Amino acid sequence: ETGVTQTPRHLVMGMTNKKSLKCEQHLGHNAMYWYKQSAKKPLELMFVYSLEERVENNSVPSRFSPECPNSSHLFLHLHTLQPEDSALYLCASSLGRTGPYEQYFGPGTRLTVT
Amino acid sequence: EDQVTQSPEALRLQEGESSSLNCSYTVSGLRGLFWYRQDPGKGPEFLFTLYSAGEEKEKERLKATLTKKESFLHITAPKPEDSATYLCAVALYNQGGKLIFGQGTELSVKP
Image (cartoon, rainbow over all chains, first blue to last red; front, side, top):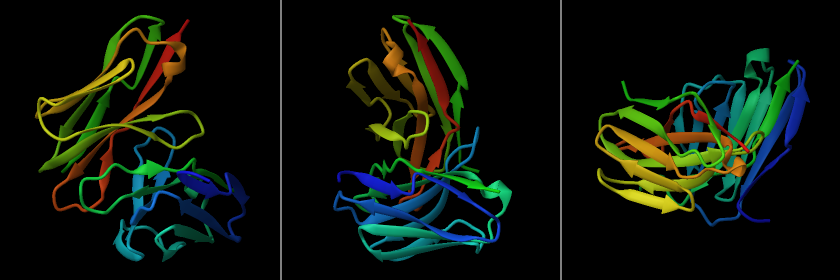
């Protein structure tokens, strides 16, 4: 595997389900990010992790819970989501958090909440 | 408030018809400006980083330029495979790794 990978690529879940999104980066980077991309809206930064420490949480509802067990892996745990949470969820990584460093993105998980 | 605006929202070109995409920004302290390409159903693909006014970078048919208020992505003699959404993002001082993205320009190149 190379670059940034995300699984699953597609996810359909009910409002009462619990699911997790997984991201893995193979670039040796130290910072990882979760973004939400909704139709016709700019990418919205959700969380930033630097060396496994959460350094930013952009007022994201508590039904989204991130986890970064090491610098290569990032998870987004989902529970009791709303239909408006349907979107493309993108993971990204960069060499560091300050820089500025370009961010490299995964292919995304298309989430549909029914 | 820090803001990034891209124009036009959509652009349709004939193959070989050169044009430019615009990214204007109103920010408190620009540390870097990034251009990305995004194909449908995929994550953004990094293209360029620009750090200071007057800087230019090129890659195949694409050329990115930067002034103190805006950046342009010039596309010379585009081909259908250049069709994608082009995203602009800025990094600011004292904002860590946070990028502020514009809404993108959807480019369609017809043969």
